[in-house]
Image 1: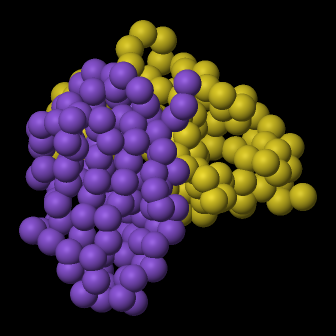
Image 2: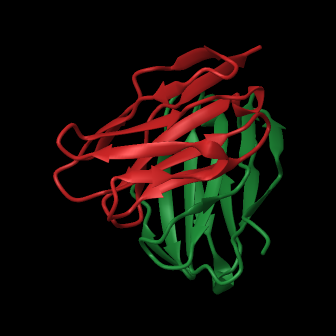
Length: 112
Length: 113
């Protein structure tokens, strides 16, 4: 069975500082990996995805993630965060089918 | 292109009442999914439609939940009768093909008192 672990439930960071949100997954088959973001009072928005090819994936709003197969990780990074990045971030995995397995989410709080 | 829309955005009902949630997928997307997030936990898969057919409803909690997608366009998710543990945010998503990237709606926040 697949599973996704987001170890950090909350991450506070100062504005313009770098941030990394961690995501580890378990799966016995090849997977697709996703990061979604939910801004306050909004729905889930696709941030970026890994399907195949380059292990470094760039997404919207300056975010990027790196797929590491040996460590079964897909950590999300941004070199300099803004107040507007305050949101909840969800990592998800799919076994190339239709069912997404989500982590429990990480609340990123950007401080002025 | 309009995104996935859901109605209502919020619903507050009493235990034992019935509630119907609606999802309109992106035009041309044959695949429609329902997910649910109960407070503080992960977003969990409920079921998957391809056009009007249920492909997988293994995530439906129990028989108080009924999902339909008549005509293969919009979908409804009915909870009858609602229980306290049904409270949460219900997300709908759609994709063009099975396995394609899923695009999510804003969710319906259901509160059962």
